[in-house]
Length: 418
Image 1: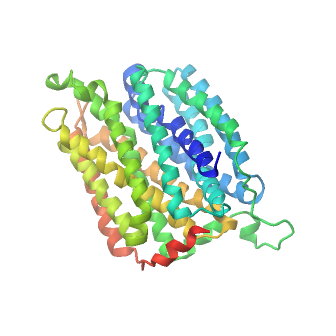
Image 2 (image 1 turned 90 degrees about the horizontal axis):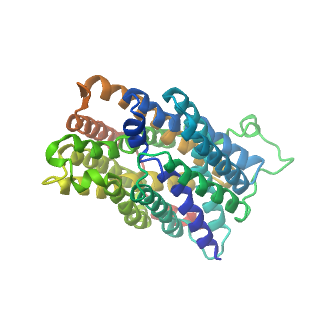
Image 3 (image 1 turned 90 degrees about the vertical axis):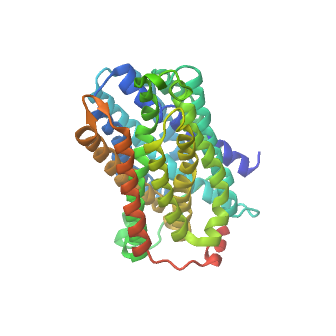
């Protein structure tokens, strides 16, 4: 099997083991368990807490001591074991603690999968990272979609079986990881190192550059927007069942499949990233992403399952641009701005800002705000919720356009190929 096909398989299951429960866990929490809404924000907050330190820590380990693919495999097997235990938990408090352990195992594997892919492609004589990585990464989105559909069509979007689906796939992925090309630590033994290098913290020097520091800060705020749509998108559609005229609609019955349009859209926009990055540069691409988030939330605010169905579908299509032009392009930008010695830890740092600080900001703040300002007599005012999220994204876009200074050099992007 070619290296590209092996990386495709890795990316497919990397996101399959997340997609099997990420979008449907709200139905399990609110519908099956009927637990509190404020605490549900903490479930997504666990991803943020884990991402505050785990991607950076494992990135340092991969850069200095342990092969990235081996560490990746160990983490996935550990993640699977925690998922198998999760359905046995009977209280929301303990559920959150166990989910935190699961996320400590899973979240760093996203950055590690990027590092493994970049290393393998750079070591392949006939590969171009900017050109070849997006078509490989698109299979991760396909894996996410496949898991969502499997969970929904088997009638498990509100059951514990969604965690077993993810766990079985994670075990298989963990074992498969040990067969991947070796990604050895780049640090040379006996090499003189500074204090920062000795601790594996050299990637944090990136904050010393104004442009990189600003990039990471805005990555954090955009990471908050991503958590909002992951946490509340499916339950938003599902709650149309409380409106008599929408109760029997396709949207209510197959809310997860409707949401999967977002991931289908991702597959198309991922393939467009090389063109947009080389043509417009990281600033314009990220600004497009921010404006797409405004549209994503605004269309949700006015959509409904009948005459407003087109707005819900268009919102899901726009999501592909919003997510990819930030997440995938941001990862490639970090890759072009760092050297091989800090590749894994730099990707971990990007994860820390987006899925760490960003997720904590988005999950905790939104959970509190929705319960305090947008919930009346137990019913959530989704129209106002989505408009508030749209306003948040618009403010970020304006600030980014004014503050982030970056002169695009198409040759700099092309030179990352090897």
